Length: 106
Image (cartoon, rainbow, N blue to C red; front, side, top):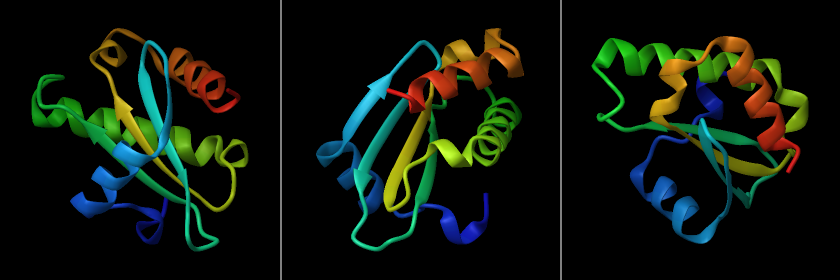
């Protein structure tokens, strides 16, 4: 995931969460909304309740890898926010990948 493809402002996050659609499963909550520009943007959110900083950073790196690996499943021209749930700590990469694919196909 490139730096130009990330959503960072709190205003954009809040707009996408309040006005966008969502799907959820055991590991992730995926918010999405059609973008005004023809560019796909991604945001990753994780609560401090999940763990210490090194744990949260590890999970964000894993999710970035999942985004790069499954880029063809994301629709072009949409903005996405992926919220990571605490259950991700108890699973391995393969389970997370299958969960992400299942979530994107909904």
